Length: 471
View 1 (cartoon, helix red, strand yellow):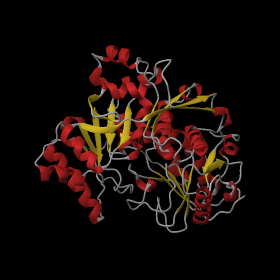
View 2 (cartoon, rainbow, N blue to C red):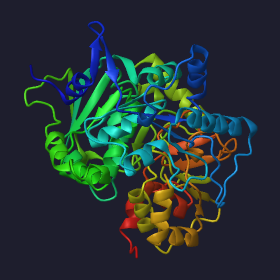
View 3 (cartoon, rainbow, N blue to C red):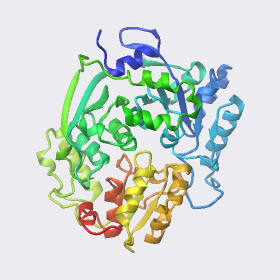
View 4 (cartoon, helix red, strand yellow):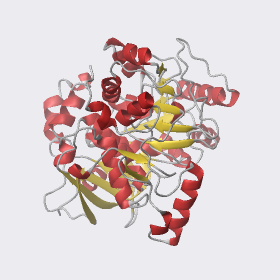
């Protein structure tokens, strides 16, 4: 029987088929953070169970950690400090590797796992975080799980998995100047809706995807969950295999055979998908969200839509509420909208490629004095590389705050938060009400667009800056 890539990965990791809809799925790697694991470890203790395979679990402190540019970081908030200390104690007790607060390789879980060679094509990777879909960029099936499921994985290294439907999204053409993977995925989400991929694992294919770097593909797979996708996949090609091979010194002896297997990880030519959609990368422009859901975005040269034209009463009500919260009116232009903050970071856009693009846009320019602009690298390795390449020095000279790695202002779980009413140009993945701080207003965009906003003091079309001389 012809199978999709998703079906092949499920079949290869199926310990037991439980019924028509569910399988017991084996996990090659389980990632943990400090906020979804405490109850899971407590459950193990109550049941007197050990961690089944500690060496296939890795833990990271990233969500609650402060990112102040201090050499030695201390978590001051008592509740957050307790979460971090509990994780450290549990990892020591069970022999689980931990990237703790001041580990030089500490960073956001979805940044450090690929860059440290933990993710290989064909794996199943689980984590108590929805953006585990990121790993699909390397041909690995990754998805988020709940705390009770974290406990089950710790105890058994397996998960009861409800098999998803299959969706294929083809992207033809190539992105034009000034447009990035972030713009592409926002374009897709805006067209299919925040629930458009609900219940599906999405496989991205086509010239537009093949032309992207691995890091750009991670952005696409990371944000697929914002369309409701249960997973996202891109079949590993030479680009992905080269990325993984460079980060897998432990596989040197077995690498040729592994690569041979990785090249077979693709959907059969006649595999059937439940839904197929097509987009043209040439139609994508730099995008900005106008509301409080990632599907509420428009190209920078278009205006805020009228809620009255939404398709259903529920959509009209949601759009009206979003505009009220964000402080905009139908027909308004986002181009020229003044901002208070710029945040460049998160598991969506805090890799070295993103920071290189920001430095390119900034050039010799300065951050507008009315704007507080922060850059939070995705990991210690990214931070070190940016400093070695002179990127950090350029951005500091421009007026950006150069922070330590962590989730930071992606979500209001640490001390990097917006004040009520502040408007932020952000490279994160979610713009929900209060996501970056109570009554904070978030506009999602690419790192290039965020850099342009920092310089201009307002949301602006990055193509204007790119058309001028950038050293």
